[in-house]
Image (cartoon, rainbow, N blue to C red; front, side, top):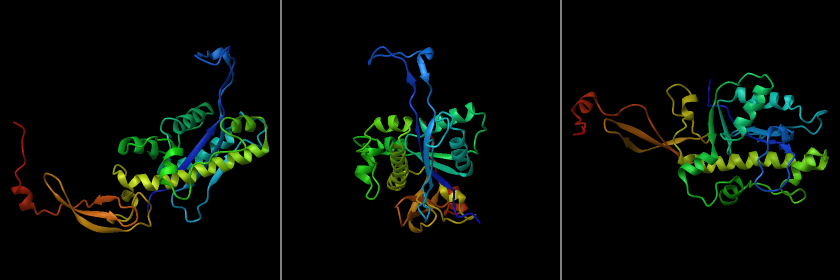
Length: 266
């Protein structure tokens, strides 16, 4: 019996495009200047609310040809195919499109459809943070997991070292990638109560209000009523995250509904 959706949190890292250029500024790189195209370097993922808190990970450190990312693609494709929903940070513009590009280039079919919740989109829609970057939001909102900064391989040096086959750099990439997913999960829990566009209750037991966007273990309490121009509905509040939802049954009688005066435009 369904107890809620399977929600996958994931993050990918890609290799840069390497090209021939004559300067540092205002470069318009042509296709014939590309030396090596981008490809997948690693991915990390976990299931939302997993009691074991298991973080899955794959990378290219042992690949004979680092540009052949087929095994990585097959791994993340399988997880996406199982997911009812996914959570990313800027994934609608980057991770999702990048993966689909690599899928189609490698002759793979699309995974099964899923809902996509992007914490960057949530931040832009509901808040006025100084920055909507994962680093800033996790620093301000997360208590346990904040985005990491590498001291040994700062910035682009981590990618450069991985491409050069530095095993210590690959270990750092794994730590970095896994931690991003854990930080993203914690950030999601902080932001999602402010949004009502996703209804995980659809995946619960039929007719039962059991599933919140913060996970199936949540419980609800009655919290007054929600009103529309033609109805009155029971309102519920999640006791764990504070998000609101409402029942689907109109509590007004047929006689009350029939007697309502609905305003019309003149």
